[in-house]
Image (tube, rainbow, N blue to C red; front, side, top):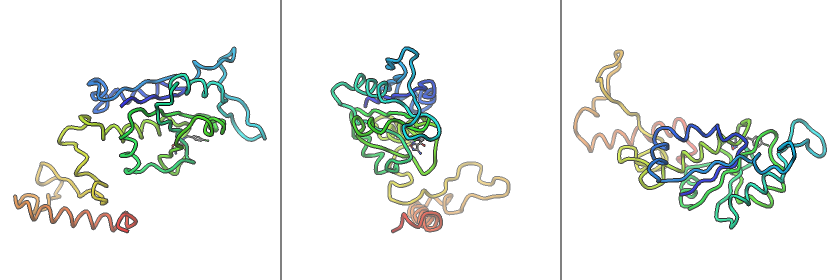
Length: 222
Ligand code: 4FM
């Protein structure tokens, strides 16, 4: 998979060089290209924002640098072009899996009060939100999405981290996990997990999943 990111702040993507995703990139399992939108500004002062028509607070990213950056990086429109904003469809594990099937994805990150609507109308395939809250820009939302999608790329996760047994894989929240020591601060590991009876362990874990899902996310059971 090739991922293109268009942003005014490419330095913000340093976290993708670290840990499981950093290793996956080193191993060539996916490619990440960062483009600074400002490099495409034709303005003599490299300006990328302006005041909104109709008035109102703050600044809006102007169309020229965005349009030229998007279509310069992705001339033949081979990328599935995503704009991150609170107005988009909310990211879900279902959407994550769908994005993981794409060969090329572009993330366009807006800042200030957003981008000129005509860029969304002309150049963007999908407006995506990571949740009902407002960030200062789309960069962290892009990183969240890249992280969730990269886990579904073949070879990124080892056997021990596989996506098969985790929350949402069966539509339920995950059961609680325990490791050594057997007693910590007076709290014991549930007996059944020490029993070696794998049928009983599986049954206990499924019961715990149902219990915690009913309590915290009853919407998932419907
Ligand atoms: C804020 C983009 C205002 C556009 C942002 C405007 C966000 C989110 C987000 C910053 N992106 N999910 N929530 N982006 O807050 O994806 Cl107008």
